[in-house]
Image: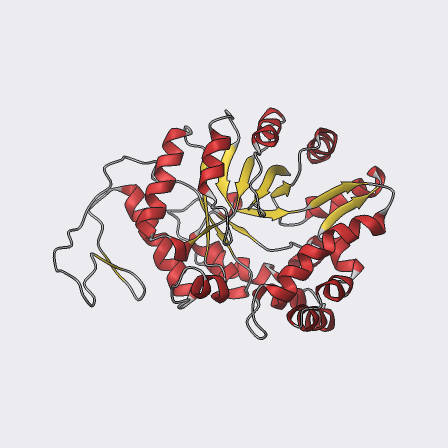
Length: 343
């Protein structure tokens, strides 16, 4: 098992995570992961931490595709990868309709088509085999649609990037997971449950069966999952720390009938709880929604309790498809314990 530092996105004020990043670098962590929603962006903190570290990989988990054209993402990735000595991992995702249309003012579109086109454009830019030309359902380069000047010219990156910068895709639904396995180097599931990891297997197998031989082999495909690790004698209290995040995503990150996180909770076997959490959350009863999160689910997606309990439950994670576990915070003893367990 490899480990990453999960920085995520900021709250009302952004915190300096350099000390945590340097600790992760010192302990031989695989990667550092930033995120973005509708506050802090994913790249700026990653550049700041990258400047203060030497070996740990720098990853976005994720950059929102609707916020950037494929060319802008390709440029950003190529630049940070070059400045960091080849340490960048390009984690991308489509987000959800509420953020895409409500924050970025972009049409949500067809997720599978858009993701496939986006990744193809990224790789074309990085390879530099010819000037960029692309004609798809979502992207046309050079642009030739309404109000076009007709002056668009196919261009090739001035910077000569690493052509195989890794691309990881945030995926939840079965078809998105299959697409990630087919065209990318890894995927990031939400609140990964190692006890129900089989829900992803059919999709992964479907994608791997279509995978091009020009990509990295499926044996190198990474599954990157966050996990709260809390060493304590108060298991119930620790689960109370985990539940608010689950309630937010299962209940509030999407509308009724269009919440991918809620759908995943149902696929894990929590159909009734998922509906109750969403109904309470969307009715403004957030405390009640948190209380409705099953102990079993909160326990499955985290590692909490005394050290011996964590060791026992970590064995399930090691046997699961997860290859990179993301840890939050900056507690050296916890990080050292996990590195020892993962070795």
